[in-house]
Structure formats: C-alpha cells, structure tokens
Length: 419
Image (cartoon, rainbow, N blue to C red; front, side, top):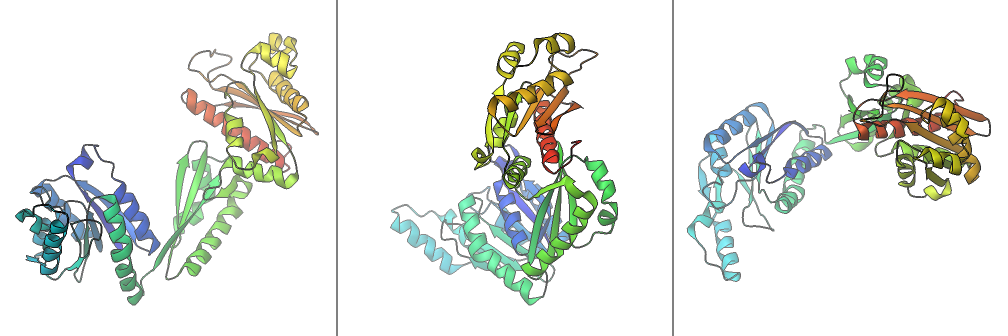
C-alpha cells in the first residue's frame, strides 16, 4: 500500500509551525506495513489544495490529510476532498448534537459555523474526536482510502492511534497485504559511502524485500534495512539474513546497530577486555572525553582526560619533551606519541589516546594545512600514531577528528596493531 501524507496549513509553509504531524504519521504507518511514498505541504488556498488533493488520490492507495478541519472559512480540507471524490457533504446529526451539548456544558455560545465540523462526505465514516471539536473522517473507495485528521498534534495522535490504525490494520490483514514494516540500521565506520556501496553492489542492485538504503553521516555511513512482512517474526528473519550478508562484505567496519554510537561500541569493548583509557586532547577541545563519558557506566573504563591546548601544558602535564615541540612542532607525529604515552603514565590507564592538530579556520601553512591532525594510541605493546587530513569547518574537523580517534581505539581493541 502506497501512502501520501498531505499537511494542510499556510502556517506550515511560512515556517511558523513545524510539520511534526507528517513524521509521526509516517512512523505510525510503518508499524502496520504501510510505506509513505510522498509527503506534501499545501497552504489554505482552494485551488492549490484541490490540485494537491487530486494528485494525492491519483497516485496513492492511502491519503492521510491533517489540518484544515476547523469551523472557519479557511478550513477547506473537508470540502475539498468531498469535491474531488464526488462525495457531497452531509450533516452528521449525532456529531452536530454532540457539539451543541459540548458548547452548552462549557457555557459558550454556539455559532452556526461550528456545524461545518459535523459535515461528512457521503459514504464516509466519522471518527469521533475525544480531544477536540473536529472529528476525523474515513472514506474508502475501490482505488483509494482517504483519511482526514485534525491538525493539532495531540488530536491527530489520538485519532490515528485509537481509530485509524486499528481500522487500517484490520483491512490489511483481511487482504493479506504486508502488516508490518520493520527497519534496522547498521552503522559503518572507516569505509566511505562510495566504497561501501561498491562492496555491497550485488545486494544493492538486486534488492527487493528487504530494501537497503545508504545514509551518509559525518565520518560514518548507515545502512537502513527495511523489510515488509505479514508478521514481525518474518520481517526480523528477512532483516537478519540481509544484515548477515552486509556484515560478510564489510566485516569489522560494521561497528553497531540502530542507536549504538561509536563511543558506546568502544566502551563495550573496553569493558569486555577489562581495560581503561585516558585522553590527552588539544585540537578537539575535550570532545573525545565528552563522547566517551556520554555513555552511561563509562566510569568503569574512563579514568580521565587532559585538555592540553597550550605547549606549556603539554610539557608540564604530559611530560612532553620541549625539544620535540621545538624541532617538530606541536602538531606532529612525535608530539602526538609523547602525549599518548604521557597521559597513560599520568593517569595509570591501560591505554592513552592523544589528538593534536589544526582545527582552523586560521593557523594553517603549506606544510601543515588546516585539518591536519595526528592521533596517537599508547598501550602496553607500544605507541601508534596516525596522520589525518580532515576537511570542513572548525566544528566538522573536530567531529571528524574525534570519530577517527575512537575508530583508531576500536581497531586497537579488536587486535589490529596497525590501527
């Protein structure tokens, strides 16, 4: 079943209101196996709304429109879809009476325009709204199902959960169409999007169900695997087989699934091996320490970090030989190695990791351009240093450097002595 979400309201186009309804509705539909193919935002303009409605019912099996169901003249969704579908509006006497009683209980005058909210396209089912005055509308035709829900998020959410999704799920089950749509994300680091896609080309070119979608992130790539099936067990089985094939091709570059961050994956490895780590940072300003300590339970393996931004502090806190700085510069392989060794000794940690570089936008030279970063890792087997040339603005360089440091540490923990 192909679905389209139509969000109605000029305030959405102007940016005065964020269109959170579309995201919530899409997530809800995914739970019952309905894929959203289109999302459209249209203002409170009769001609443009009609064009959007005609387009939606012409290309989708399910159209869910939110907003524009109130009592005022610019609330046009109900009238527009009735016109497009050739279903004249009829007053729902039960809802009209409910509105009169509601206004009476609240001691508010009942004006005639409120009855617009009791008008329902011929053949449609009125979905009672327990949180507002505008009901939902469910209209099923042979070639399309149209659902209209109010714009206020709490009203939309309740109607979708309590009235719309159960009805749709029953119909999908009765027709033996896919009843679930489940996704899993595999997180990949150390391999670029193009290279990863090349390695996965046979899977990507032949995919049907599950589907595989690459998602480029800062310094890593995610692959979202989505399976359609009649039940959750079958969907999970399909996903597991595809995930296995991806892992076979990408190997240790797949570091985690779903919400597992790189720092969490590193923390799990440290716990598994019973090791501790400390950081010595310059260009990243403590970002690696911040990421490591963002993981609950990190006190089990993170002993501490030193933000040695100045050369003087590198010397006094980390025992870096000032002759190294004088000869090679603070941004160098030699200083990075000394920093990693120094922080390991100073904290008594099993592993020391260091970063020194030029985050920019100034400070670069022809020999040492902006983005140049050296990352060192020291443990009982010795010290390893890698040179990186990152790109982007200052913040992007810092993020990429922190990512590279965690990945270098992860590789070390996996037994790769060359990082």
